[in-house]
Length: 307
Length: 307
Picture (cartoon, rainbow over the protein chains, first blue to last red):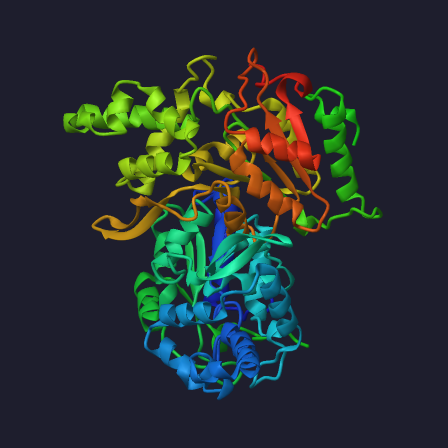
């Protein structure tokens, strides 16, 4: 590996540390060699692989859906989350995040959006993703991925890592675009989801989306639990950006294998956003443990892919 | 593909049908072409990839563990499943299967075996698997896989299928040996499991196995639900051997893609076992839908790999 391997990262300690780790674990003669079956990498999605401000992309998609539902059925306009969607009251959703009540937010959204078949959901979400745009940057949401992180995925893939997304966001939404955006197959997406039911209908058996969240919710301590359930072993590379990623990183650190934890720090108000809110404990932990903090402002040559 | 591709299968309609299907879905010029991302294959394990008689291999491992626990703590000898284990009362366990109460059996075993850390379980199960032997054939359990089916896995893998096991048996037990036995990585094993908890202990954070089954239980209608949750799309190839595999096969058939369902029929009392018990509905459905029934007696040159 030479410096051209992460060309979208500035030279410096962060890039050096990543390249050094990948070099060490793939050197079959070295003391830190990790055989390919154990080369598991997990990435949070919102704020780690794509932009999560001014609100989760997930919520952007939900807003349009809830407005459509409330338009067809005006009685819904007095109920949440339909009321907030119709009034474009984004602060209503932000309160949950600021108050560290993301599970309550997901539960509300899941209960409000339940009832579709899996096929109906996929058709609706695919159509939404085709042309929905970010309100500040006016880019397609599918172009809101962080180019240096997508480059990092490629570096790990070339080093025989198996790469998973482990997100508190909606598993099914991410699955619809992960193959295109990240070259990550659907079965490598771990996320939040509603329970599904197998129903016998006139048209045949059908998967229906139910008003209940699959537990454990995939945030904080739910992440290592779901990583074990879906993957069967700890990651040796974990990347996140918020307090909800702490346990996932600690799972990597507890693996007794060489490991690397990376925290994306949003400190670039000009090119993206600058905020520590929701990441205070993670930043402190990474500083304390000497885990790698990637500064968007300092370490990334570009944030989003060039058009 | 020519007939050497499944050399452990006898020539005949079953082998022809499998080879024809794989040829069609991989022919990029043909009408039945399926792009690689959608080439998902799912295999039941007990009775489909390895022998499930006289009792599930899972239970064999549990018996030894429960005997050890009851030896260390005699008070357990009056409780089930410890009592049956100590008395080697295999009929006690078989009743659950014959009465179609496999979930109750799994629930009992999960509740009795809970409390270990994930690392403790893996060390114990790995040690058990190293030398445990089948009571009739006196082969190591790890040599009780069906050689023609393992050959079929290789055929599908070479055709760019991604292969998953979808078993009612214990996910974590299968994961410990699937890489060696089937060349299937841990993250491609879907099965029954206990809930896990992330506990802060003096030695650090630890995954602990809890006395509750992850729902839905991975049998019958739980199989398509869990396939969707773990993989994100229906299989186009599904193989099973019992009534618990019916919904998984119907999921493949409902995919609107070219698909292939295969039912292993245990009709070879001499080389393995002959029984339709627990498979009556699946056999009838496959006959009705013209899905492929593989007869062990007629279609397989060998059952177990040669020593």
